[in-house]
Length: 291
Image (cartoon, rainbow, N blue to C red; front, side):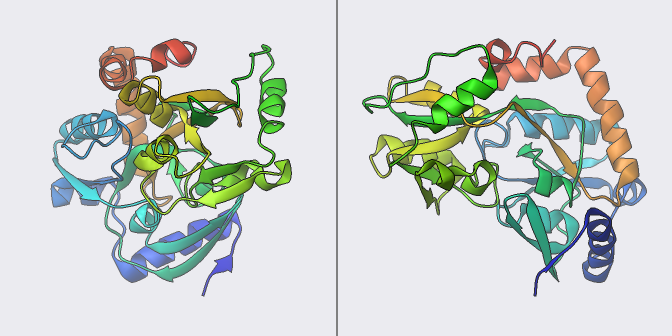
């Protein structure tokens, strides 16, 4: 059974659920164990699946900072948060319901996890580590033309929304690409829920499996580089968003130590070097974020 809960209730339920399923670890327990478990979903260039990626590199350095071994735990978008907090979750729009207790499999989530309202109710986020936004993307031969940026983001989003009517748009539940988060249906468009990996959504549009898709900025940047001339960005469907590393609400020491570590690598230039390695175009799209 799932039950809707408030933020305070979520914190208590997450703690109790973790303790009932498997003891939730904070910094002291992680150091005693000698390893930090990185929950990751292979996605864009955050977790490549080849043992590296933006998030992998950062968490490996964090493990060295703590003096413990790095342990990668692969998961997927449906189970990544349950694997962290020890409870099943069901999200719809901005609400979230907690379900049965499940085993805790990791200590933090790092794979381009967008900070959206329902996730903030069950996960403690780090300081944002990457900028993002939701874009409307179509094949390059689509009759839908990209909007002319007006300089006013609200007007640009409204202009894009007028172009959605009558079109099928791919999205994915339990992610930042869930169509209900952006009220896609009210535009007269039809939402099509994708059963495959987020990494394959741009490819599905290119293959003609769907007319259009929602993509977040990191995935769109990877797709534009991977398939040059095959897709085009029509425009934004959300305000600017941010991604961060996710922690259990009852791991405050680990969270605080990561905050100190992230500040350190941003200050000494290491963080910018990782961005340049995996997302060089992001520096041009979001110069203010990477100042």
